[in-house]
Length: 214
Image (cartoon, rainbow, N blue to C red; front, side, top):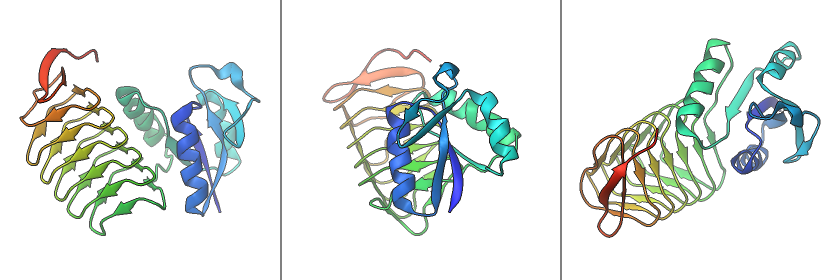
């Protein structure tokens, strides 16, 4: 068993911790809440909140070398990942044992593939990508750094998702569509055409309705 610390102490962190335990080989050393370090000592998700990022120094001294970033804000997740990388932390990709992932799929540092997700052959996931519960990525897609594919979202073959984009619950993206950087696609949207950078899009078919807040 290798110890790993979970960065985050909210709902997504609990989900990731469950996957870690079901994978085998991982022991959750605790949770980090950098937004509210005063939670230190609180029982949470089957372990303990250790405080903010300052608590990581003591963990390293105890021999803990691996961390997983487990919160939803895409840009902040990438920033914390970069901070961990600068400190020499291991940031393994975590795949829930109930997910189906092709043998040739590229998993970037810190990726998380959740329960029931399907990632078909030829897909490449960048750094800190979340493929959430029961999402489906068909063959030969590319998902850039920090994107979050929400539960039951579905993507045809050869789709490209730009960095830090958020694809809402149950959204469907047609094959060969390109979604830009920092895009928000609303829950249940049907995306049939390319979506430019930095916008919010939703509907059937999806239409650009506003600039995204980044």
